[in-house]
Amino acid sequence: MEWTLVVPMWQEASRIETTVARLADSKFAHPDIEVIFVDDGSDDGTAQICEQSCARYELSAIVRRLSVNRGKGAAVRRGVLAARGRVVGFSDADLSCGPDDIEEVFAIVGHGDADVAVASRTTHDTTIAQHQPWARRFAGAAFNLELRALGLTDLMDTQCGLKAFTASAARLAFEPMVTERFAFDVEVLARCRARSLRIVEVPVTWTHVEASRVAPVRDGLQMAVDAARIKWALRQK
Image 1 (tube, rainbow, N blue to C red):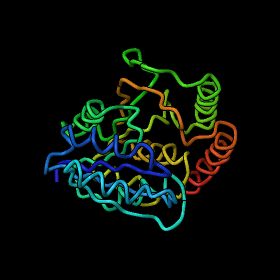
Image 2 (cartoon, one colour; image 1 turned 30 degrees about the vertical axis):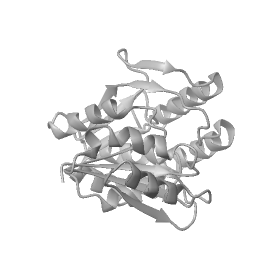
Image 3 (tube, rainbow, N blue to C red; image 1 turned 135 degrees about the vertical axis):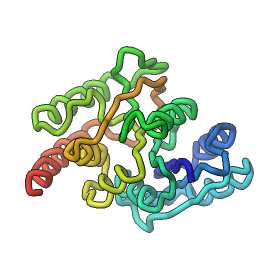
Image 4 (tube, rainbow, N blue to C red; image 1 turned 120 degrees about the vertical axis):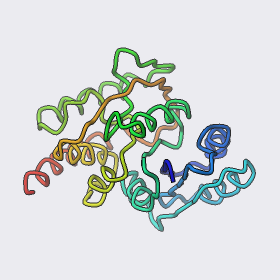
């Protein structure tokens, strides 16, 4: 299998069909590419709608389910550890970065130019088609400052929901991962950095999609706490 794309889902009944349709009309419908949707304990029929949509648009994909809501990180980890591709990555279900950008990020790793490719909303060549509300931008900037102060990253954007890894890098990062909610990106990237893997930030075209699953205050506070826990956990290694 050439690539594996993991798509975590939670309460996506209203938009997962559109996501499936876009992927079915892209390189990700190729038989050498594996697509794994992971439902994070949704109670709105997301998994069933996803399966029906895959059949309707003839997208060969696997739909896995977590019995209860555990968090985006847990859903991504479930998919990554089941992946068979030489390059393994994940994208948010809203496709804020479209299929062309997903393909580019995967290709950078596939061509051997990096062990980890991280989509970034902050590089000079990035195009923001629709900005996040100011509160989310402020929270994101503050979180990045915390990560830098803790010495967990030197990247400008750890939280864009599109990343790709070599299969070996994915295993190194996700097998020991313990952060199950939104700060999981920080942990996997910090683990890759600790192994001196080659990490590159990739400019993309990014569009804010309404009905984001991240609550700036509640989840922002949880992410700040999780970042400190990640720092402590890595220090114990």
